[in-house]
Length: 298
Image 1 (cartoon, rainbow, N blue to C red):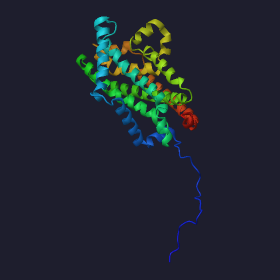
Image 2: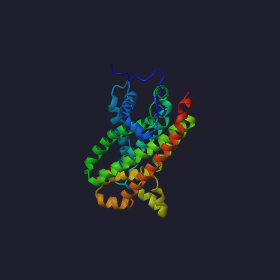
Image 3: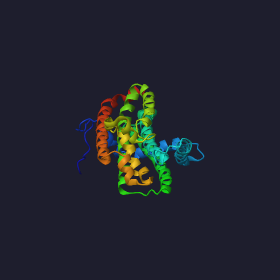
Image 4: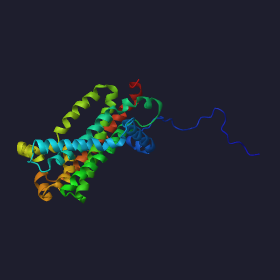
């Protein structure tokens, strides 16, 4: 008769004790892609719950904003300094909305999901990341409206333009997630941070060349304009303008040379690298504070 391999009663497995909580930060988030996908779906469904038109609103909202800008800045104010000024504004608006929605929703994401955090052991970074992905989801209909508006002006996609768009989105995704991580954990400790973020984002649209052209900054501030370009959001707006607005003008090559700063793509890559560095710092701060999140949510 074969001997039993069952361990004796009271036997303890010789293995190190580990915390049931995830400890690998953002890497752990993408290991739980299924949960992340469920969170994103839940956020989108909750936003349009009880709505008759549902996701159609994600197209109606950007279209209505574009038409408002066309009426005010083209027909009412007659802004002829900047060619196709309504499209110039709308390209910036896409970047601004993506960033502010990620920042605002991400800051509130952990407190808003406190019931789920108490019940499940999962990487808490998942909630700010899910907020960023929901915001990215709503960029798609805005881009559709922008393309439809640009085509009548003779716009056609080009390789450099599409690379500029991807680079701009990368900057906003990285920087928005970084700030959402920092402020979401800070908001757990002090709820004032959510209100502070709401105020901070009010200034974003005035800190980028959206309702005014970049050339105006150069005219007014001369050599100091280079410091203006240290703003990653301003760089992202200029990249999206390169992708769309420039192609709608009468002479795209001349517009790119005179209306946009030099070394646009090089600056964009630098801003992406800086945003990635901020994300690393944000992850380290988040991990140093996340152990106390459950007790602070009580």
